[in-house]
Length: 462
Image (cartoon, rainbow, N blue to C red; front, side, top):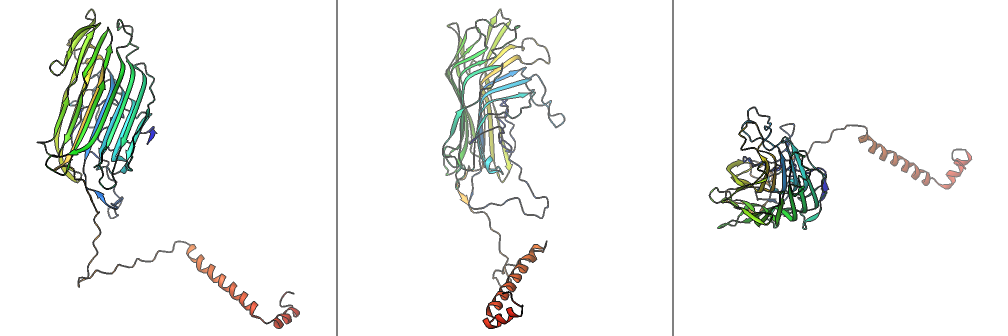
């Protein structure tokens, strides 16, 4: 675990922590990190399996954002590198700011070992016209290797005029079994929690909000949790991929003396079994009770998803809405296995300031500002028949056979080429050492009388 200024998200399914916009999941082939190939086609691959390999194929992710502030929602077109595609995609917000982002991601098909399981708790993220740079202060834990214990701590609180926080904490846990791969519990979990929040506390003077300086306040604990795990598949020994996003909140205070009590918090789950008939999206819609100065105004639930509350002579209007559930499903083939994948997005509460839907003017954003509390996204993908928990040895190279059936003897490797004079230095060294030793032996073997005569003649030193 480490506090990182660079979040390792390359090749993962979603860049949840890179920016606050938890957009609708675009379902296609589950993306993975491209496997780098050799420059020469005749060269061997970059790496080969070593030791027992996990048989499990599983891809899943869950992301949850406590608060997402959008200025000028749906105000600018989406830029793409493909001509004409931007006109088919939803428009982006002019500016976005996300607080308390938690994401859990599992990808057994990732080429890099550190991308198999990634859990993150982000203090904040921002995007301008859909472009979201990486943000510092992220709490990250990855696997491989395995992490027996989670890591948590306080996250740095950003200084911004759009939101003020008092306490922001995060917790991350990423697991991986050496033999069974993702077949371990818990697998990937990330949480963020805050206590004390004010959103849009510095509004322009043209927007009068009586009785409160901030548009939204959260006085009590507010928690976001993202979790990916493998669950039992009914009638089979294999597993299903389950991605879950949950919210925990008590109450929310709005400008004008409004109070929203969270009767039932939302839970969004995607379960992929590999089969379209048994894969499903499960959503527990939130139930919110709205009151103003002690007088109950109504209840927001699945049957009554929207409520307009005038704040100042019907000129300043807050539009409260439980964002509708959006689902996408698709079959896929490739990356070594085929199966089924599905995903969904939801938001616990949308608060729109000065909505423009009644103006009937073209090219206007949906509202002056939009704050989403409890933004959730999940996605899961599994092979046909479910995830297999087990290991297998990597294939070994077949030994060529001789005509008689016996294995051919291994070929002798050719000698290495001589590239410099260093190869000659070793024999020269030992030849000189041998000659020196022979001279010492000859001198020592001469008789004493012979050596005395040699000294007298000046042959040997005295």
